Length: 81
Image 1 (cartoon, one colour):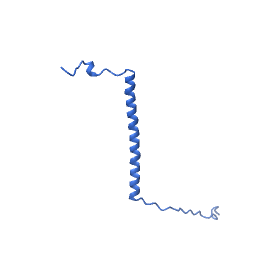
Image 2: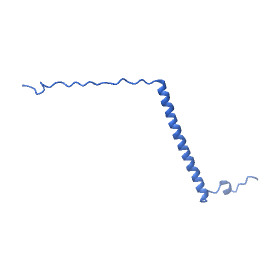
Image 3: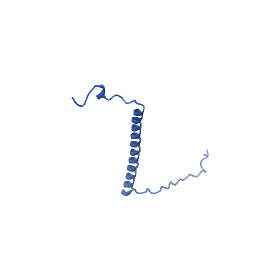
Image 4: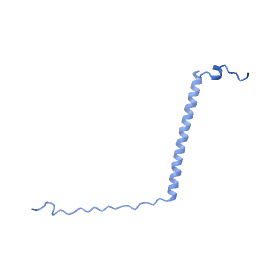
C-alpha cells in the first residue's frame, strides 16, 4: 500500500509582516483638527442652505400673498387700550 502523497514536498509559506507605523501625539492632533475642520465646514454649509431655504420660502409666501393673518389682527387686539 503506497500513498500518492509520499513523494510530495510540503509547501512552506513565509508571511512577511511590515512593521507597524507608530502613531504619535502629533498625528492624533493633526487628525482631530482635520476632522473638526471638515465637520465645521459641513455644518456651515448645511446651516447656510437651511437659512436660504427658509428665507426663500418666506419671500415666496409674501410674493404670492400667502401670509396668514397675524393673531393680533384676527383677535382684534390693539397695542393701546
